Amino acid sequence: MIRDYIRKELQAFKPYHAAFRPQKIKLDANESPFALSENVKNKLIQWISNEENIKLYPDTDSTELREAIASFWNVDVENVICGVGSDQLIDCIMKVFLEPGDRVVMPTPSFSMYGSTAILNHGVPIEVKLNENYTYPIDEIIKTCNLQNSKLLILCSPNNPTGNRLPNEQIEEIAQNVKCPILIDEAYGEFSDETMIPLIGKYSHIVVFRTFSKAYGLAGLRVGYGIGAKEIIDAIYLTKPPYNLSVLSQKIATWVLQDEKVNQERIEYLKTERENLIQELRKLPNIRVFDSDANFILIETQDLELSEKLEAREIFVRSFAASEGALLLRITVGNKEQNKILLDALKVLIQ
Ligand SMILES: Cc1ncc(COP(=O)(O)O)c(C=O)c1O
Image (cartoon, rainbow, N blue to C red; front, side, top):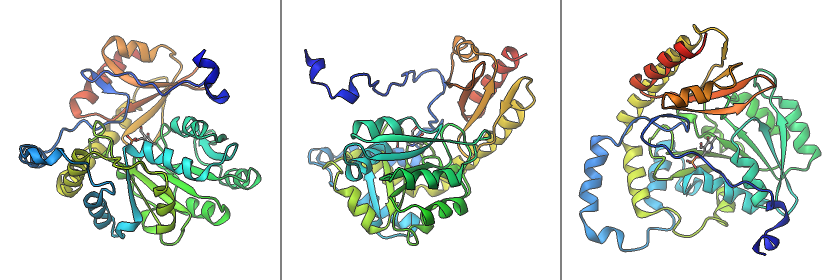
């Protein structure tokens, strides 16, 4: 039986699954509601019409895109690595630092891929529970890393699914007391007012991951990047697959990043929508609405069927089990029309 040959720790493993429903009111995966800008679309049409452009392997080092990212963040190109989504970089960083049985410390609840990618790479996820209000137990995180001799600490800020960020000051406190590599996952960083990127020169064991899947609207293209001191970027490079980003992904991501005015307008639009949505949600009875520094909002409800009720109206959000008798819903901030449809539905469903 093939099953007998599967690694023991993967016998009961569940591969990542996410529902695929592109045509609906899709507020379940924190994607952007915006399509490619006219400017980028025109560049793409022109580029694709040259049949020479896709017949060769891409630049394995994504140099043009890395240069654009380096220039955007005012760092050197050697401080940047690109991956097929930040998912690939999360895999690469675990591949390079984990020996079988090594511990990876991660506050929880957070992005589910951290735990599963650690297991796939023969590591052991060690979860540190966030405080009741989802703030970070800083001392506990430091203590756990040191006691467990962790090989990697992952801090997601703003955190998925809770939406709050971990202030730089607290990240610095952790970094000063933890020796192992620290991954700061800023997948939602564009929606927040703080980033650790300017501090990578001060902490050589910190690497920041970002993505084009959220604020930049390129989830379908799969592009992510990491920024850190040369030493940690070189380390992650050891496990980066060759030719990982397609030539199309490299091109489009470069053009999108350079479309700065459009990006800023879109981010501001979504931040304004987020605050409006939070305000409106707070007027509804019987739900708890958390603050957010991301492009999604977490709510807690006692109605365990609320997610199904929304689905019946073709509105898709992400649900998580909370404490007994409660359900957490993570709702992506969409465009004005989507947000109105969502609110109108919730006004009827929540009494
Ligand atoms: C916190 C966090 N990190 C990373 C990712 C992966 O992003 P990408 O599309 O770049 O692989 C996600 C996607 O939902 C996320 O929420």
